[in-house]
Length: 449
Image (tube, rainbow, N blue to C red; front, side, top):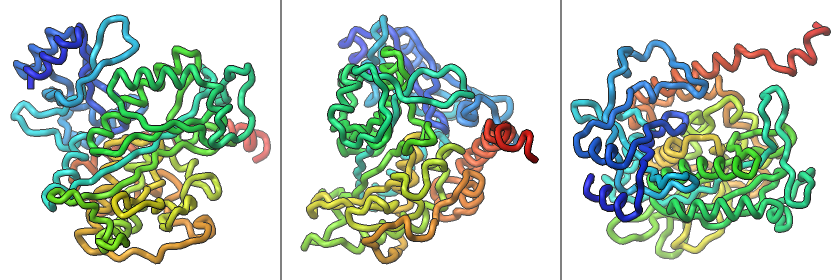
């Protein structure tokens, strides 16, 4: 491992390395080291980081009552960089590389509550069955004017024309050109970092963009989405605006999603097991859809992890409210795109752009896996407007956590400790949110109740 990393660092003239460990919220934590010190740390196994990084909340606090999982004396974990993830880090004055690391205890055991390890665990389950999942994420985000006061609402930025957008411009090419300089830099930085983007479009919201990733291995794509978010935010700052992956940043605009296209191949033959020889939906495909429909509403916090996530899931808002499924039907939470037999897939439209890609991918794949293993049967597909059907997704993070805590099939496979830590983090965040008095309460209740 150290030899491969050393060769890459030498070949690319890198003098500093950012060693990254994704936390439960998908926040990048880790250390920045001189290249020589990084390589000696890899060789000696002395790259360390506190285990508490996997229990920190989005607002920098730590939940109580999980000391039996991550001890309160907070022992160090060993960072073990994945040599397949090393890549150029654009935008730095000093030649720098990113590398993503897994963490292990001093006894050499993997820290199995880590989000990257959770996704690896799911992929091993597929491998044991002779299956290889393939995904293609689509990530939406907004460009907004810089805002240093959280009490003020976000607003669209000024484009090249000198005017901000005020109306929906889905797929608008001239609207896309308003931010051509930012878009060109995003593509350039991603190319330098080895992130394989497919297409970019202007989405429905004002200054809302969507990037499609090329389909491939879920772990590699989770790594790429993680770094993509960081690069986009940095490019936007260079242009004097913010880029945000908040699920619902503006009350009068659509939310931002991370749709996940997914199919499963037979590892031996390479055949898409979602199709029959005649090109029809296979029994495994229907069971996969059934697993998504039955279990995704029970693990919603894994792909809608924040209080804001549930503001996106509203009727007629370009976001699903249930897990109905249908062919080429964007009102459904589960859409079957038009495709030939080789490319048959299901699109999970539930996850928000604010979700941790490792956990969102793992949630979708494990629900489909359970569906196939248990030979579940899906509900009848629909052809009409799914917004006219009953809501089956939770309305708030509080109710979502209640369901999450009792989802035994997924808990058994992902691990009791992971469920307990993740729940504790989200419960702590929820408590902090509920402790804040909002401007709505001051506006409408202060002098009237």
